[in-house]
Amino acid sequence: MLRRSVAVFLFLLCGVGCASQRPVTVTSPSPRPRWVDTPPSSPEFFYGVGAAPATGYPAEDRQKADYAARVDIASQLEIKIGSVVADLMQYKQTSAGKKTRGEFSAQYSQKISAIVDTTALEGSKIVQRWRDPQTDTYYSLASMSRLEFRTRIKKQVENAQKLALDQYRYASEAQRAGNVTAALRYYANALSELEVLQDIPFEVDLDGDGTKEYFRPEVKRRIEGIVSGLQILTKNNNQKGKVGKPLPRPLVARVLYRGTPVRDMPLVFIFVRGQGQLDEKAETNSEGEASSKVYRLESVGTLVVEARAELSEIMGARALEALKGVEAPRGRFTFSAEAVRVVVRISEENLGVRVLDSFVEAAIVAELTRAGFAVISPEEARKGFPLAEVQQAMGGEYRAIQEAGKRLGADVVIVGRASTIFSSQALGTAKCCYARATVRAIDTSSGEVLAAADLSQVKEFANTAQKAGLKALREVSARIAPEIVRPLQP
Image (cartoon, rainbow, N blue to C red; front, top):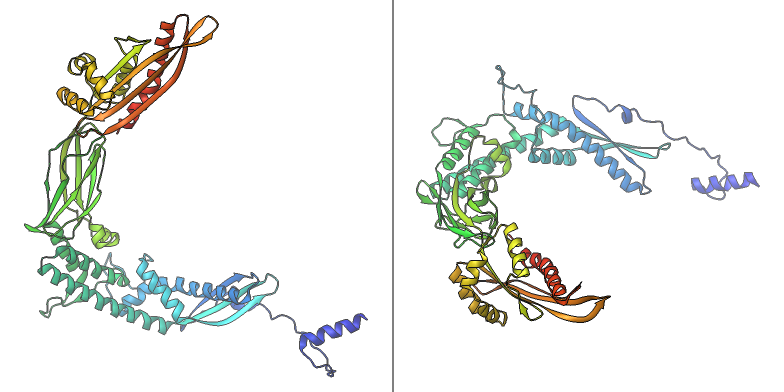
């Protein structure tokens, strides 16, 4: 029975017909190829080996191994590309301090890496595959002709030189037309196109006089000439503002190149002293002007904002890094910010009797002082802002608030009322009172309500109703002061 089952299994496996009585030969797995552990070496080809573990999808696993083999070739090409380019450019300088054709390091840009990867993927071929039956790992062997590699790199070099010269011509035309922003961009593109050459000199006749010039130094010289001729002038300087408020007028920077307005120049505005919120980026218009609105000042004293030409946005960070010593033009705005002046007036009663020294008012003044506000003295506030006007203000007459604030030179007026009522609730022999408070912070220039706070049912006990009421007022003042001041802080 067992022998019959084995025979049927082999019959199905080998695809032999039912009538066939040929002996079945079971072949053992192929031995491990030598290239799996030791890739071939040849003066005519590059070889790469890739591996991928089995995942149950043989077609995908083979593709992964193929890709890994091509990546292996790419890593070899990165080492060789410098010497191949030098050979193509007939670069033979070997004096002290100079690099020879075999000494180029693997400092590659993304562009060079992309060239190498494309060359490896398109120019290589998979010549063998093998699956290890023990580890279930797929292996691939890729090869690429060294002549094919040289041919492809030669084409890349020639194309890079052509594109670099095109960008140089565009830059020269833009510079003659006065569009220095475009000129800088094209000059930077010209340098970028030559990255495939690494630091190998490129000589070419740029002005048609029959004499070759070194391309990179000439491009850098032109960039430096443009940047050194840029100037940033500032308008709306020396303004005065208030902390927590916007600056009255926008900061305007004007970019000139040898006296001529520069359009499309990106600028960045940053605080170099003090703090605030502003438009950080802007671009110059046809008059060479770019503006930044300061929405909020957050520091007291002298503040400084710097406007700087964002050359990296025009030319790219890599090109700018190569131009060591090139400093972007800058302009500075200086202005001052004062603390916001606040007047506080609270009408306060305890069980219907006016409280002369308001607990709520005192607590708010203390909180404002800790937060850095300039608080008008209570004495001055009482003279310039009678309680009758406070009552009007609490009734919604904000015009009275604005007028009182302007008389006192205040930017913000805080008004409110607080009171207590007796409660029949008792705790033993202790009396009970409830306190309530309503407070508003008003902008004197616009009449806008900047902050509002309302508290009620604040309960306290004491041996007399009067003391219970005062205790409740103290408690409500401690709670409402931070609530009304917090929204006013920068």
